[in-house]
Every structure is written in C-alpha cells, then in structure tokens.
Length: 102
Image (cartoon, rainbow, N blue to C red):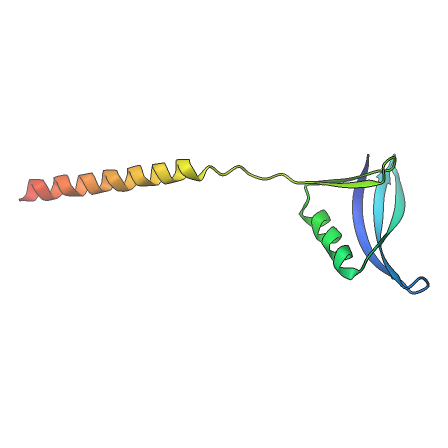
C-alpha cells in the first residue's frame, strides 16, 4: 500500500476524457498514477472522499484506492439520561424550597 499525498482532476483534451491523477509516496519518491473516470462528478466524489478521509492509500497489486475514516462514538442515551437526572433534581429542589416557604 502506498500513501496518497494528493489527487488532481484532469480533462484530457486528446482523448476527450476525464481522469484522476494520484500523487503517491513510493519509498521516499513521488510517483503519479492516472485513472480514467466517467466524468467530473465522479472525479469530484473521489476528491471529496480523499479530503474527508483520515487515511488514504493505493494498492498497486490490486489497483484499489482505499479511503479510511475515523468517527467519534456518540452515545446519545447516556446524555439523555444525564440530562433528565439534572432536570429532575432541579425540579425536586424547587419543590422542596416552595414547600419550605409555605
């Protein structure tokens, strides 16, 4: 696997087709690979995937481009329970204060 350093969208006027050019870090050297794509929308999709990824690599043996993403885990159930407890405690304190004043 070779690390992808950048992507470039290219319109080849000779073949009148769109391509993506990968800039790769190959054992301390910069290498470039070009792949034909169906159009500018596909090229834009690949560029956005590269920009959003935390790691991107190219496997020269299989020709696969791999984009990896890292997502934060959000446990909304815990937040809701904590929020309900705080509201419930405040409501209990307010009731106790009102009972004490009466």
